[in-house]
Length: 147
Ligand SMILES: [Zn+2]
Ligand SMILES: [Zn+2]
Image 1 (cartoon, rainbow, N blue to C red):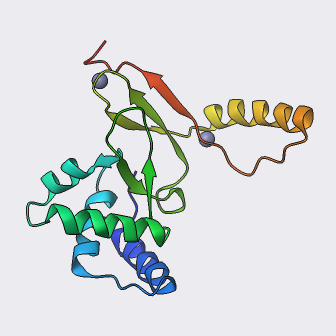
Image 2 (cartoon, protein in one colour):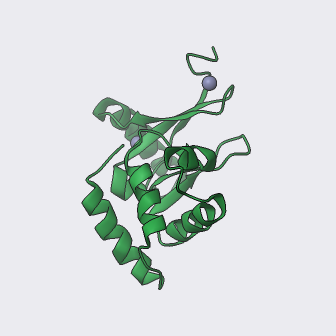
């Protein structure tokens, strides 16, 4: 899911400022990679996308970007953390998570999918007295290659 890179950088600069951090060239490079992908990336995949990045500083910068609320970690069942821009930057979407190879793909939040989810959410809100503000939906299974 991509968005204009200038917008992403402007928001990142503001949010980093909020946690007393700056938008350094290393952080810019990470945001450029994460803006230009249609799925969450592991650290090795991030490093593969830009051979100029060093693993230790890339990892530290991802942690800072996460603290600043620009990047979030997608947690799956394998040992690899995956990173993507926060949903307010990329747009609301879901994930397809492969249990075979661990690959995670974005799944667009189509109007029909969101209608179905929101109708279930409305029922749960009524039955449980729980005010739902947001939802996440990851579909776990086998990708075409693994199946
Ligand atoms: Zn797979
Ligand atoms: Zn949704």
